[in-house]
Image (cartoon, rainbow, N blue to C red):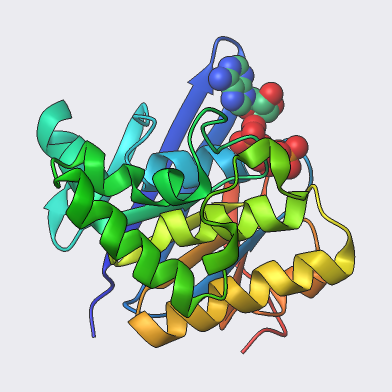
Length: 225
Ligand SMILES: Nc1ncnc2c1ncn2[C@@H]1O[C@H](COP(=O)(O)OP(=O)(O)OP(=O)(O)O)[C@@H](O)[C@H]1O
């Protein structure tokens, strides 16, 4: 089966810093792929390019057979909103909105009416065991609760690929495990693929397959099925 998302031979420099120099990533529908590697090796840059957030200087990113960066900004944004979900390390919830409104936000940004969006968000929060947190604002939630709300927000559009950049980086290990259980159980249940950037081998152990990035280049991680 051909991969759903393919990044090939990506090159990216920032001024005199080379972030990527021929990095590849292929993600099949429904699989969880970890991306590990030393600090500064290019993991986040690879994730951002693969997700259509950062244009590479060279190389190709295709999603469902379409060249993401040939698409133009408007169509590429629509792919990101509808097909991709994002979970970052911290500080990603809008502080003025309730947890429910945060989860509904990707639908609202895609033009879904408020009542419909909030009903869908509430149903999802219920299934994820977050219903009682719906009225709380992010400042009233613990770090782990905020990340679980962020996971719900990433899932609300029914994405095909979830990009998670150090989703447990700001959490203790027990709380991190709860977030990873939630993320991977929900991804398995909905058939979403996950690209998981992490420093933590315990987090990477949730993946089906691993990729290592070193000095802007990627390779398969030995010892991971
Ligand atoms: N927006 C930017 N402007 C300038 N340099 C950048 C930018 N983003 C990344 N870099 C540089 O590119 C290189 C790769 O960074 P990247 O964040 O992809 O690495 P990483 O492997 O994710 O690191 P970490 O594990 O520390 O988060 C680093 O040298 C970084 O300083």
